[in-house]
Length: 131
Figure: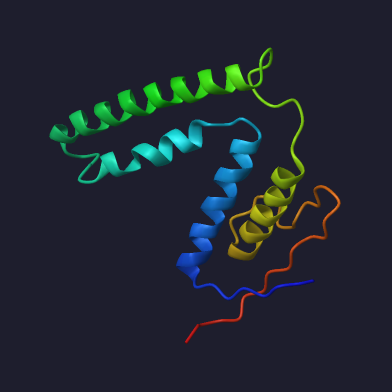
C-alpha cells in the first residue's frame, strides 16, 4: 500500500527534524535530543549583546548536563557498548525518509536518496505553492 502526504514547507521542515531525531536516537546519538530540549533557553539570545553571554552559558551548562545523563542511559541500555551495535529496521527506514526529505528540500549534501534497508526509496515531489 502507498500513501500520499501533502505538507507545507514548515511542516516539511518539522518532518525533517522529526525523522532526523528518531534516526539518531535509534543509533544511540542522543546529543540532538539534548539540543532540542534546551533550545527554548536561547530565546532572547543576541550574539552581539554582552548581557546575552549569561543566557548562552546557562544553555550550554544545561545542554551538557542533559547530554551526560542521556549518554549514561545509552551506556546502561547497551552495555557493554555505549550505543546499539546495529541499526534497527525502523531506524534505517527513517534514515531513508529523512534523506528523501533533505533531497527534496535541497539540504542534502549527496543530491540523491541513498537506499538503506529493503524498503523502496521514498519519492517526494515539490508541487509549488499550496492553497
